[in-house]
Length: 406
Ligand code: GLC
Image 1 (tube, rainbow, N blue to C red):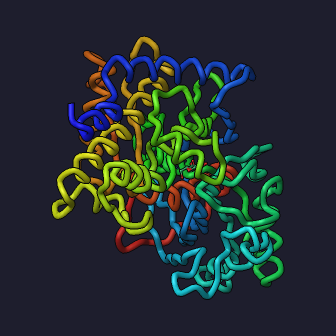
Image 2 (cartoon, rainbow, N blue to C red):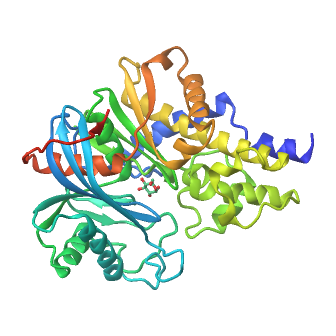
């Protein structure tokens, strides 16, 4: 076997391995729910699924990684919504003017910046309820309050860990004279994706982000609540020496082992490390746009490595979906829609197909009961739905020109 073939072999996940991972994942879910030690945090969202008839105009803040997005969302009922206005800004200025993600940046600076983005979208004369998609592991005490447990995705801003993020946001809004905007819901992006999917699809009960980061949530019928698993931290996985080296060089060695093997933030770096070991120059990490790695024009060995790493990502994610399904519906007695958002899933050629094929392999004859569906911008509409579900205060509904939804 050539060097390259031997490496690719190590990144190849067999059907048996995928089934074992699904079983280990389901066991980790049980442990986490029962309060036993588990790599899955199983965080309660305090939110149930929407009816699809929630209505009104809300602000949605999406803080999940490199960009902050704000949307004014009108929920129209009947599973439809309309984005009336929106803005997006990077937390780190590409020209170097500011960086709110480094350890020398403070919580106050970060949330003042976010309040500025909200000001750019909010109508000056309107009172709003705001739904906040905050895509990091949080301990929630109810649907509106969430304390950041620890930063992920290599963000290091000081003074946010251990603090209640909607409190920081509300204080920043007050300081800017925007006290009429009330943050009433805080959700993980997976939860937003599930809320947006379930707004128009009764079978939607699992949602994942396959983007810069990776995580999955599901609707737990026995608790009548969506649970954010923080599945990126799952660690019972057959990983390679390259995964271990990447982990050792990361901000938090030992943490987020699944995420480091599957998410866009890390895949380019993983490919670069494997290629460098074989003497192929793959450029510095940041030039490796994940979608570009599997496209034409990439040298053949590099493309093979990238294909193996990306396919493994899809198969690992599918294995965890198999675990969730085994936990929520062991007999596979009903239909399930798994909503997926994120650039890796949306933009990597072949990724959704590889994920679907691996899931079908795990589920066998029951595979027809499960649909995978791309749900875009769930964190915007989902945050608005969360705000509506939290308050259940319908507001006047204005006609919309081009409704979204499904
Ligand atoms: C990271 C975060 C998680 C989020 C995921 C996708 O894993 O910890 O909360 O859902 O990225 O954005």
